[in-house]
Length: 340
Image 1: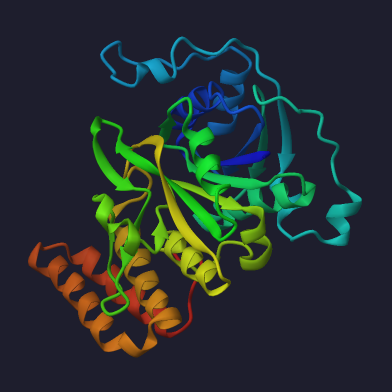
Image 2: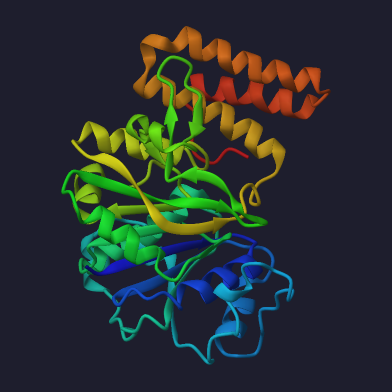
């Protein structure tokens, strides 16, 4: 089973390099890494290329408990292929088929760098990678993995074993552990979204796995069969709630989610966005998700969102309050995608 691993980088070159150092040590025999550079403003592309060419080392404190997953550094230089995201903004168009670049990298110890000149968000950036993978049509699974993670050596092996055990499994998740406290669970693969309130929570007890209805996007293995039926990530979301949306959409197409508990991924949760972005996109997308799947419970969901916004006032977080109000307004006006 061939796997395409998609990593999205946005102003996070140091985390991305650490993630790549762990990925390229995995024991899985047949995978390729696609790194989508998502319009960073911190010189990420050059620094990542310097790392690949052996001009930049990734340093970790000797006291870091996860050091064993990324040290000593991989032997450099690494080969990489540099492509433009412009060629993968349309899904398998005649133009992209005609101009299909020849892949000269067929070694799991190398990677492909696809560069976008603009920030396409979590959904748009990952869709560039998914279009690339489907364009070549030779992958059985696509693994969306956050750049602020490091993975155990057998993380992908265990994911594929679980996903391959049942054709009805469309999306599979890993046990997510807290990077700075590796003994603490963030989630057992996924979570539970309430149709009444529209709120979600991560699964932390094995007994709750039977109620799990979405996989956390930090480690998100999708089968090719699921992508062909469900399609791409919805770019209406831009960021936040997109993982929940994709899983609920896949369920409408007859797929279910599953957790590979022995696939371990360590995640620095909450590194990527400001609180204002979280307030705006989090509230807007939560409301949009409920309108899309649980419309009959809208009054309860709207009450829950109002309580979230009220909490901003209580905490004297007025900018967050205004961001939430704008999120509600934009959702009802159909202003989705990137707005901030």
